[in-house]
Amino acid sequence: MYIPAPFKITDEAIAYDIIKENSFATLFSQHAGMPVATHLPLLLNEEQTHLYGHFARPNSQWKDINKQTALAVFHGPHCYISPSWYETEQAVPTWNYVAVHVYGEVELIEDDNEVVGSLHDMVLKYELPNSSYQLQNLDSDLLANMNKGIQSFKMKINQLEGKAKLSQNHSTERQELVVKQLEQITRTDEQQIAALMKRNIGK
Image (cartoon, rainbow, N blue to C red):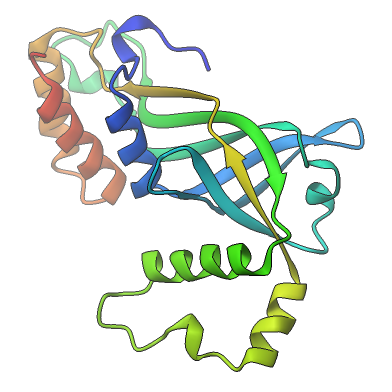
């Protein structure tokens, strides 16, 4: 990923937080000599050494991904930045965003207990705290049949890159003007980018 120095995330803890908060990722690999991608949730383990996920078995990307070095892209908030928000319009539009790239070797998971454990962790992450749904309450035959329809995997984290493009290459005055405009837009991404910019102004 192209990362100019002002935008580089140097604190791995921040990068891991972005992964956790934006866990619906895009996984890229090579299949039959062509680049392929799947959009899927990827969970970070407690030790922060691996990402866990699963493919639908009819998705052929998994068939030759074992031992490949793949790329997982986690997309954080992003939004358009208008030059009309600056103190001068003699500028060009841009886009502010947050993203993390993870490179690592993929290993297919065949152990049933590890498969069920990763699925259980996924349900726990996404179900609301007061949800009555629990994976262990599924009928064992239903769970076994579901497992036959997926291919679980884990991806060892070998390299981590984080980028937070938040107008750091502009003056403090201009950053504040951008924040003021973003805060007037009710869409979630603009609100999140505004909050991140406010947190970083002056640093």
